[in-house]
Length: 91
Length: 226
Image (cartoon, rainbow over all chains, first blue to last red; front, side, top):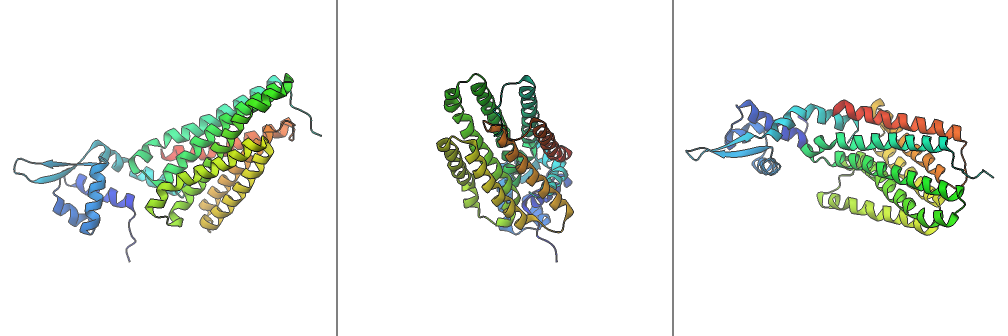
């Protein structure tokens, strides 16, 4: 059985997916690849937008995309260190 | 009966150097973890940082109290120590209690399964306990009552941490020993606040060196990941 991902890991996975798709992905494929229920996905998306990890872009045809901000890239870069630190001090 | 302190430059320099090193390590730990906290808003990291911020402030208050005490005894102005010494003593009680509770909470919060609403008020609860303990210091005007209150708190928190995190994992056990030593040396440090010298100067220096090593190890572990 697959273990339940914790909050930080889910955020990492979502950001990683966006980066993988050339830093521009529509909401529907992002929901599909993130392996979350639509309710959880909405909650995480709101959190990521609110905290400035991602931003919403609407193109000239009115299509919505998500892209990473500098903070989002920084999170991806530091994720291993964050997990290492949490693990080191049992936080 | 142990002798009174007298101002001696060596003692003062040792105390000052010790305080500067410990405060520097505590504040650097707080500063170095800012980035990962800003990125995650992780509850454990938040309280881990608070621990070192408040212990840094507690060590500064401890040095101020020590200075006032030495001056009061040396210049034979006991009323000065009685009036001005009470403020740093209250701050020592307040800051260190918040520090102890924050470190305990940082390792326990996941196991306690506290709901989000209650976790928002946990710091308020810590403040109430800290105000109670500093109130004891204020009304008793004695560092020894404060030592006693903190010792009880430390024993309780150490037992709670042991019950919750101790497992067969060697890494967890090492971390637990580190935290217990950190708490223990804080208590030993408080003994220097008495008007009489309970520990010989040389032994106190040895304790202070070991205490710096303990905080240094925590600093090293932090620096590895930040």
